[in-house]
Image (cartoon, rainbow, N blue to C red; front, side, top):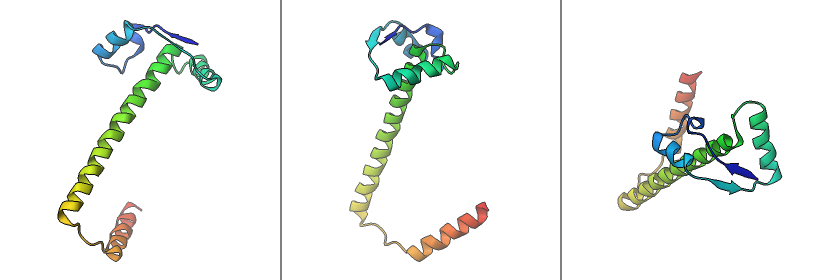
Length: 108
């Protein structure tokens, strides 16, 4: 079990409000042994100063990833709606291949 009591300076990437909120919040969390071992390894190798810092960073990244997924889903939904409104444009796969090959040639 990891007891979360995070110091103010242990979350350098977090905003002031996030650090203040985390600092005043305490939670006990039970982790499966594989995650607990991983967190211990992160602390032992010096990747994070404490288990709490490692878990907080993981949660921060999860939150960030979820926001990116939501944004991508919104963009996808918008593109589908546009396609339904306009009927889309027929794809010319030969033209797509030519452009892809030209782009690949410029990169090499």
